Amino acid sequence: MAVESLRNAYGQALLRLGRENPDLVVLDADLAKSTQTQVFAREFPGRFIDMGLAEQDMVSTAAGIALTGKTVFASSFCAFLIGRAFDQVRQSVCYNRANVKLVGTHAGLGVGEDGATHQALEDVALARTLPGLTVIVPADAVETARAVEYAAATPGPFFIRLTRGNLPTYLPAGHRFEPGRAPLLREGGDVALVAMGAMVEKAMQAAEILAGRGVAAAVLDFSSLQPLDGESLLRWARRTGRVLTVEDHSVRGGLGGACAEFLAQHHPVRMTLMGMDGQFGRSGKPEDLYACFRLTAADVADAAQRLLERP
Image 1: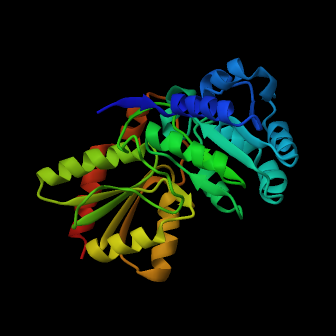
Image 2: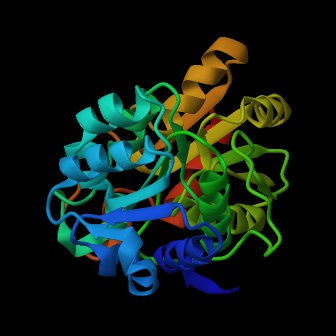
Image 3: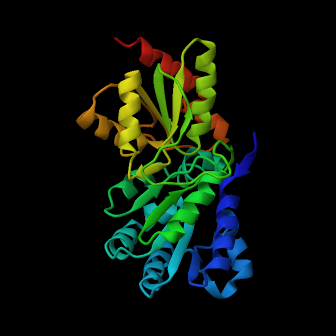
């Protein structure tokens, strides 16, 4: 199975789109090498602006440029893009329905040694509160590229959340991204593993562990957080009666919160929410941090087993 960088997929997608659309503009906040917007900058220096360490100015500037009729991508680490510039995202981008695509990289515990200050664990929760903001958390490089292409072709505000590390590719090359649709990566009738972003890999590995125990786990890639694929969630909740969500993010307002909110209103079932819960991260290698906070594939499999045993 191929392992690829989501950030590289983002940079290459921007390059392709820049060649097709002369009205596409890219902004960054002194992190073009890390976010891979440098690929676009090298070929289109006249349509690239490095705003320096000024994320709030960057988001406001992006909105202003977008309101002149341009399609604007603005990138930084998630912790700074949504956390530091939330007011500008709310007021300048979402309130004005500006055609701005916010792409945050280095999300969650996957940032690793950069530590708690850089590990965005609240960004999806903040983004989900904003009217009109489409929120996407791709699981692999293919889904990243297709989501970026979809965002560029669709008017209005987007937030796309990318992890730092390389991830296995699960979606086929011809995958078509659709907001509000969660791809089914694995069939199973005993329990539904609902994951986003980097945790899709853990869910797929956990499903293999569970298969060895005689448990058939379905795996759903909930890359679209807003809008949420309520239809798929409802179908698998009814079929399995057990839903386990797993995310590299706080369960409060993240994927777990979103699924719990929906199912509480439409079809309450037994659930387990796996992710961060009232904690900051810490510095360490990503895999060590996943082990520390009990977010490994083995942890997911064990949690699913306990969920199945609940009366």
